[in-house]
Image (cartoon, rainbow, N blue to C red; front, top):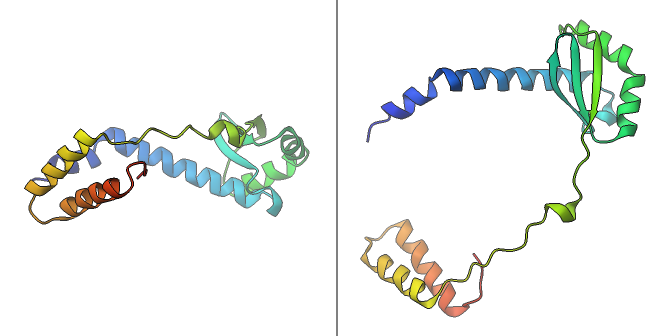
Amino acid sequence: MSTRPFQSFLHSPELVRLAKQAAEQRQLEKLWRSALPAGFAGLSEAVGIEGECLTVSTRSAAVASKLRQMEARLVLQLNDKGLKINAIRCRIQVERHTHEKIKPPKNLNISPKALATIQAAAEQLPPSPLREALDALVAKRIRNPASKD
C-alpha cells in the first residue's frame, strides 16, 4: 500500500495554511495566558486579533468587567511580549448548562438476526484481533442481550 496520496495530503497548501493558523492561535493564547493574573487563566481565551484590537472570549460578564479594568496593564504587558495591540475587546461566551449537553442514550440493541450474521462473519475470518473482538461481542450479547458496548 502506497503512502504517496497521504504524503501529498500532508503537504497540501490548505493543510499547511491551517497548521500555520493553529500555531499562531496557540502562540496568541500562550501570550494571553502569560499576561493574565493567576486566577484568570481558565476564565478567558484569546480569540484573535483584528487590526490592533485583541478579541477575548470570557465566561461571564463579571470576568469581562474585571478584564476591562485591567485592560491598560494587559495591553502594555502584551506589547512588551511583542504583540502589537492597543485595545482588548471582551466577548461574553456563556457556557451551556450540563443538562443541555447530555444526549439521550442510543438504542444499541442488536437483533438476533444481526447477531447471527456477525457470528457467521467472525467464523470466516482468520485468527486476528478483529475476529476476537467480534467473538467477544457475540458472546457478551448472548450472555446479556440488553448490554451496551
